[in-house]
Length: 198
Image (tube, rainbow, N blue to C red):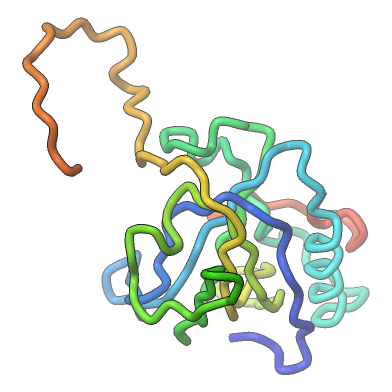
């Protein structure tokens, strides 16, 4: 998947969504299961270092023969507007992934502890994390730059994301009911390497 010469980088802190870190999942029938995590960013977040690393990966692979349209690893939050956490439509999200299980670390009693299994208070949708990852360029099925996931470090708790916002039901009239408590891929673009991921 990734170029062995690719540089390992640390992401900007992002809000976690759809973490698949302890049991790999296949998102399409017949595809090999993989581990992944989404980090959501607002329009004011500085993604410059990550974008530069991705541009460097593109230049390393294609040099001056840059393909006209390259799949962008920085995708618009508008793509996931139906889900909680993606409300800033001018923001971006990334989804690093790997076939290898990442190390997942959390802070506990002043020490960084490795999580061996998924827990409710571990890495969940809505908390904040950084990841180590390697940008890599690829040609098939179409040219693009991806992000190989290595490890995950939870850096802060946050309000849990509820999944879909149910926006499609806005304006639908309903009768009140008794309530019981219960536990409850990307745009294409062209241009020079310096502006690939703007």
